[in-house]
Image (cartoon, rainbow, N blue to C red; front, top):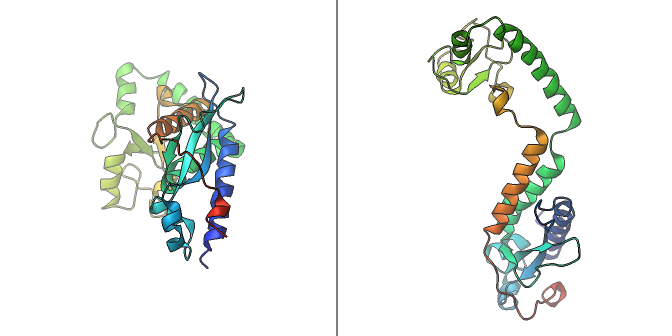
Length: 241
């Protein structure tokens, strides 16, 4: 059942509040500022908002009647509110900003992290044992795709652990349902079962990944348009009764 305008607006405000709570946990490294958001109406909203009362607030957002203003908040209580605010649409909030904050919060679970470390340790031990017996030429050949002989990124098959480059894997799966090296069945293997073969220099720890994701979020916000402060910001109650 479609939500009323009031209900959808309350849900939006709750999501913004949740986003603000998450954002306060992740300040920028160099100045300690975190982003905060608030819902605002465009200056012409009072002329057109009654036209969208029959639907949820996302239509009002698509028409530019609702927008989310983003500002920086500092530890000492100072903010850039009404001075240097950025404007984001509801679509930008739900497509990029909110999911990015949720992803920063979730990260990698302890179970996933432990499972990944166990599997990587097993392959690392095997890899180091085998490489100790191989010459540099043999090691380079080990990193080549066994089909096209190119040094491309490789995928590892889940059952037999044979590896080949992604292009060759796609070409092979288009005409065969078995491993090209040992003929093990691939009928029940989908893309989510594949591992990506990496070497040590390609591995990124989770804390570095979190910092990079946070940096990308701040870069995205910094590129949003700056809004000129309105002399008066109308409240929610003045438009919706």
